[in-house]
Image 1 (cartoon, rainbow, N blue to C red):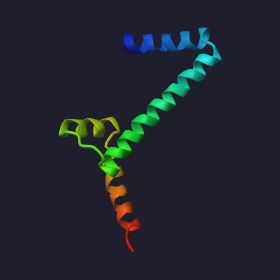
Image 2: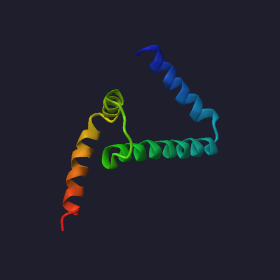
Image 3: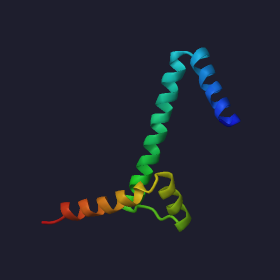
Image 4: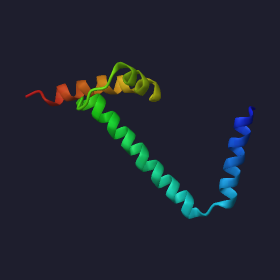
Length: 86
C-alpha cells in the first residue's frame, strides 16, 4: 500500500475514535446536500439542456460519472419522446 492509503486509514481511525456522533451526522448531511446539487445540475444539463457548456466540460462530466451521463441522456430523450406522443 502507498503512504496515502495508510494516511487515509489513519484519518478514518482518528475520525471514528475522537469525533462525536453529531459531527458524523453533520458530515453526512452536508455530503447529501452537495451530491444532490451535483446530480440536479447534471440532470439540467443532460435532460433539459437549460444551459450551454463547452466540449471539455462535457467530457469531464462524462468521465466523473463513468460514462453514465451519455446513457442517461439517451434514455431520457427516449422517455420524453414517448411521453410527448399524443
